Length: 320
Ligand SMILES: [Zn+2]
Image 1: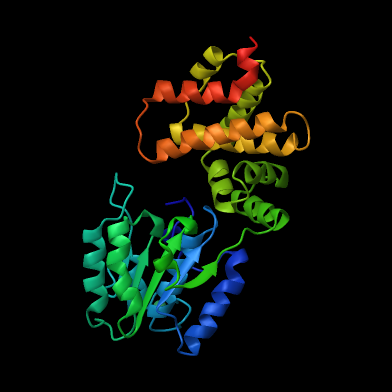
Image 2 (image 1 turned 90 degrees about the horizontal axis):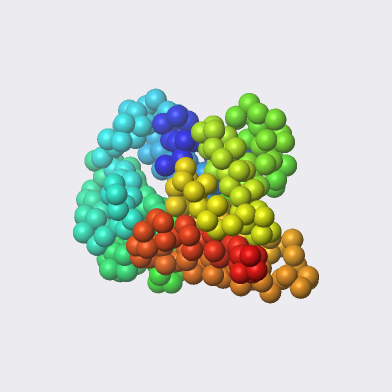
């Protein structure tokens, strides 16, 4: 969950770049043609959780549907996580996957008559964390949904979902806002300069919420320092053995993610030059390392970060 969470932004509403999508949904809801299943997807850090919360809360609201009023009985229950007709399914603490048992329980929940006489809403987030068995257990509900039901699948990596799941949902994509619009919003939220906002946005690959988190949690300086270390490694100004101890304060996921961004950035900057091939090679080796890590292969931190540094150093290290 990001720092821009649902409770801190009550009642939930759309972020500026989500307004057209939100309003379209409201029009559909007023017309009584809410789809049974929506696949809400887009890059991480665009506030999809918040949009899903706004849709779901608004649909259940008793006073001002399809926008949430924030303080009717229904809205208060949603805020407290106690609304009998709404369920939010995420991987359990410490786990990465949503298993088949959790989906079976959610299917039973969806089939029960609504306690409040309105909609039943189930949000699955992130949908790609469903195991194949879990996704298959959901298919029947997607094919033959119960009466007034809305299923929202929130996904950061829509390509990782089963095609059979994707094809049974109405697709709603949250696009990245333009850099000027995004930086302006970040600067306003974090009370920082536009320059700082733009720097954070760059590091967060254009995702405004991730950029805002970097600033609010005081992690921007650390990430900038990390980019500098990676640049020095690639330029041969720093040895692998010198770089590895400098990685100590950083989480492995942050190191991998930043290294990949750094490699992508270098690839763009050396486009067309004789270093382009080397850039591709570096990026692909990093992608393999990230993929192995995501699949749960445990190298141990020391081995992983040393390999990471070696990949970035590439030819520079070999020549030393
Ligand atoms: Zn309400």
